[in-house]
Image (cartoon, rainbow, N blue to C red; front, side):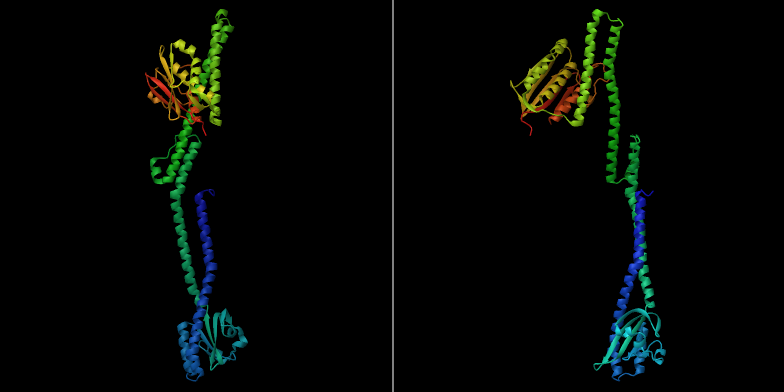
Length: 476
């Protein structure tokens, strides 16, 4: 559960909420409280200056009686909810808007709380003999005719700030709670848009990993749960599964084909060897069957060599030894090796060259192998008493080599498959029992390694033509 993305999102939201609530109720509360104290001090100081200018100066100039001053101060006390003390310059309180007893007891602030008068602003604290609750005090000296007459002390009980502070903090807590709810709603949206589709893809990947390569997500789930990006990812995963399935089918086909191609010559070799050993084949006839055994051995050698060569191409690429040579001469020499096969089927090889010598840049040994495979293929699928046309043509610095037969041709649905390993157009193997199905695969690998092209034109019952290109310029 802890490894799940949704769990981590929930824990992250809870952590953010916890940090938010702790911050609001500690650091923010303290900051708001300090701000409120500063603002209150400023207001009280401004009011003290007004009192000093409008009332205290009139009082000390005998234009306002103590009773009139007391009446005005009580009105201001009520309006500001602030206790006002008028203190003589020796520190004795002679007017208190809240408790007349402080005047009768002749309390001296300098003796009880000297810092109240020595500082303009004092932090909330209880004042001895005046108040028992934390009180914010603002002190202002009063002058008349440039002579210190006394002090105005404004006292504001901080309990009056509690309700206001609680209102602000509760508002912030409510906002934080709403923000937390919003984050959880956002997690729900993320779950629907990202996590749930991701789980669908994870399930699909798990099914494919378990070998269920036919598993698919329903079209409804694709439409409802998979946004465009996830749908493309799913298509990629499904394509990978299809390729794996095709590879699995290819491996099965590979094993079946290679088993067949190895078993046939091995069966012949074993059968003829046992027949010669037990005397079934007389001594004078053994030479014929020894030739058959040698022929089948050669088939096995050729098949093994082709498999190793294809494996080397696939793992390390085709290593080329590029040189300049006459392609016409190579074609002639390759055709000479098929003289016996052509005589057996009465096939005529027609060579057409526009020039006596045509130079190309390529790997001569690999191109000989390409020519051998294509000519061998043409002879194999040509009718008796027919012909094969082999020609070269120069166009735009390229040499086009063509090998064309007039044999059985290739079915239309097999044209793209002939390059596949072990593929044979006749699945029953009735026409081509001795082919390995690897020749054209090797041919295409070699031409691709030269960064050239090879094309196929074929009509069933008419014939087949292979055309590949070679460069007349040295590759960079």
